[in-house]
Image (cartoon, rainbow, N blue to C red; front, top):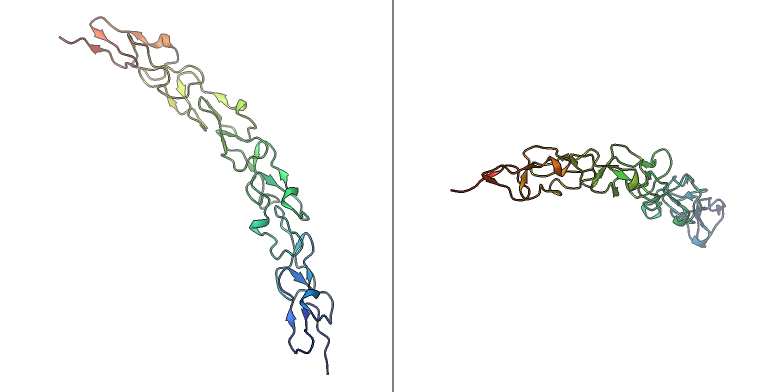
Length: 230
């Protein structure tokens, strides 16, 4: 007695084997005889197992599932870094949206389990940012706030301090022998001029450098006057 081939399989003519439709396909109809009778998985879905009679998993948010997908979160079909999606029915990565400013989007961003990430303190995130520390506040500026959109939103480094790039707090006090006006980038950026000195931390003006005393000499960036030799 001949038995009709069940859904999810195909049965070649003259054979006794029921061959399951492979992953990425399904077959809702009985009595199919050839591998071409297996239907490519529907757009927006993945057929993750063999012998399916219908697609079994909807595409994950942050990924695209073109026709014939077998994985709802295939890394090759993830929304690229700097983009995201909140939909499950995308068919091409070009349909992913640009990550909004003030946020960062890793590969496959979207939905409650892969949310947009806030921009890190000491950094800013224009539209299309790929990770939270991609764009540093420029040297001479800092920020302890998250979700900045541009470098202009970083604070200028305060007087008497210096700020390296990406600083979430001012990096350090100005070194003795130097002064640090507003927006200083390095501790040694502004040396006390020749003929002056300063032993203090945190000078903010050139006027904070003192005149070299009689009997001593003071090269540029002197922190302690040097006595004249015998």
